[in-house]
Length: 458
Image (cartoon, rainbow, N blue to C red; front, side, top):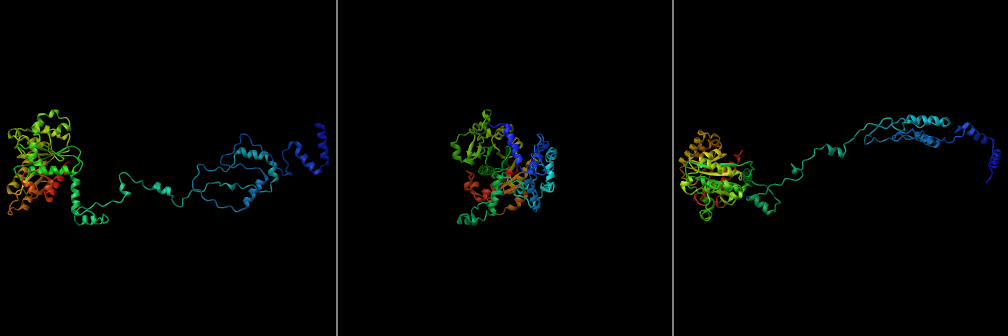
C-alpha cells in the first residue's frame, strides 16, 4: 500500500503539470469551503430542509440548468388551449410555493441564480392561478336520468306493456276474432261491456257483513223465486259464498225452490229451529255447515215446515241467527214471507242494510208495494224505504189490458231503483229455479238486482 505522503507528492506533481486556469478554478472552488462557483456553471447541490415539505398540489422544481432551459423552451412555444375540466376539483390548486421551499432555494442556490441571470425563469403561469369556471354545454345521460321522474313499477305496470283489448264474446265481433285467430280484435260490443260492468259491481269486495231482506204484502208474486235467483247470481260472480235464510212464518219453501223437492226430501231435514236449539255449540263454519244446505255455492238455512213452529220465530231469535251468520258470510239474503207485522219482522228490519220489495203487474200488486213503502217510512225505516229496490215480476203474464208502463211509473218515484223481471216458465212453475234454464233476459234482470243490492252496501 503506498504511503499517503507519496500520494500527496504525486498529487502536487499532477497539479504542477496542470495549466494555470484549471488550477485556479479548482482552488477557487475549494477556498473558504464554498459549494459552487458562478464561473464554473456546475450544478449546485441542494439540501432540503427536513421540515420543508412541499404541498401535494405543488410540483417540486428541479434546480438544474437543463431543466430550466427546457422550461424556457416550453415558454417560447405557443401554449396549447387547455380544455375545460369535466369535474370541479375537490380543492383549488395552490399556486404559491411554501415559504420553507422558497427560503431553501434562496439560501442554497444564490450563485446558481446569479449564473443564470440571463436565462428567464419558468413562468409562474404554467399552473393556472384560478380554476376555470365549470360550464356544461349539454346535459349528460346521467343528468337526464337523475332529473327524470322515477316510474312506479308496482302501481303503473301498464307504462311498459301495451294494453290489450278485451276479447269479444259472441256476435259478429266474436266471430271475426275466432276466424282470424285473434289477429283482428274489434273489442267487446256495448252489450258485452254492460255485462262486464254488472259483473264488476256484483263482485265488489266488501268490508264486513251485510243483510238484504226480501219481503212483500201479497204471496205468489215472485218473492221466493227472486231470492233464489238473486242468491244464485251472487254465488256465481262473487268470490265469497252468500247465504240465504228462510224466515217465512208460513212454511217457507226457499230450500225446495233452490234444490228441488226430491233432493230436499232426501237430505237431512235440518231447519232454522235445529240451529237455534244448538246455537251455543256452533263455533266454526264447519259446525255451522251441519245445519245448512248447498245449492252450488249458495248456502241456505231452511225454514220450519210446521206452521205452528215457524210462526214462533221471534225477533230476538232471528237476531241471534243473524249475528252467527255475520261471522262467516259477507252477504246474506232473508226471505221474510208476506206481511211486515209477524214476530220476527222487527228483528229483520233492524238488521237489514237494504230491502227488496216484490210486486207484480197487477193493480193490487202495485198498490200493496206502495203501501209497504209508506208503512216503512212511517214506522222509523225511512232510509230503508228510500233505498229500497222494487222488483216487478211478470209471473202470470197478465193480459194486454194492464198498462205495465203506468205501473212502473207509479212505483219508480218512491224507491231507489225499479227492475222488471220478464215472464219465464222457469220462474212461474213454482218449482226448482236454476240459472241454466232461464231466459237471457231473466238472467240479466237478476244480475241487475244483485248489482243494485251490492251497490247499496255502504
